[in-house]
Structure formats: C-alpha cells, structure tokens
Image (cartoon, rainbow, N blue to C red; front, top):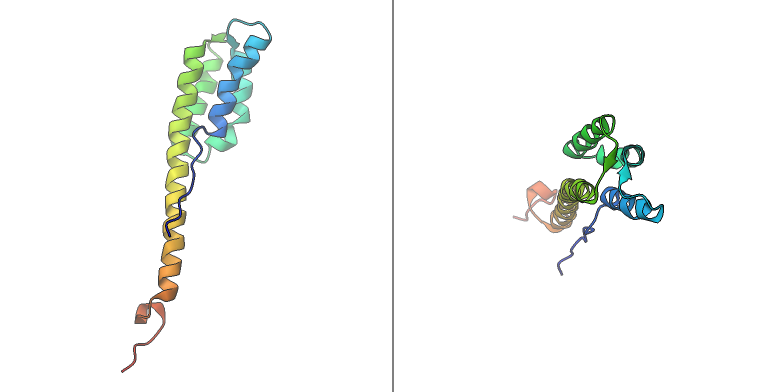
Length: 122
C-alpha cells in the first residue's frame, strides 16, 4: 500500500499575503499600503525563515516597503506565488524525506541481513 503526503496548494504565508488585497478592498482602498505589507511580512517571517530562499525574499520585500507607498494586486499575487513555490518545494521535499525515512525504517526492521542486526543461519 502506497502512502502519499498531501502538500497544500497554497502555503499559509502566501495565503496571508493574498488576503491583504481583500482586506484592502473591504476598507475601500484601491491598493495595499506599504505599512500593511510590512506588517504582514513580519507576521510570516518565521514561516519563511525555514527556507533560506523564502527568508531572503521576505527580507528583500521588507526593505522595499521602506522605499515605497503602495502595492497593487499583480505585485501581491507575484509575491504570494513566489512564496508558494519556495515553501511548497520545501514542504514537498520534507514530506518525501519523511516518507523515505518511514519506508527505510520498515524495510530495515524486516530485512534479515547482517546489516539489519540479524545473523544469517548457517
């Protein structure tokens, strides 16, 4: 029986970035303020820190928030897509490594070779 590990289509960090647009529209703002983006980037910092490339992206975006005033929908979607890609790959790799480790542990427990700790008869 093959076991699969589901990887979310959207990471939590990307979902939080995408939600900025809806929150901005609810307030009647035509764009997302740099201050709102900065606050959200700090909120996802720990999740991004698990993947060096994602952390670098978040740090770069934090720097950019100091130099600008607004973000449009296209910029928000692009950032969220990048985070999904970086964090999704890391989640997939972790899930595969875990599945391989689990399979190796089961195989090792059933393997009657000297390496597995069972001496062959004879």
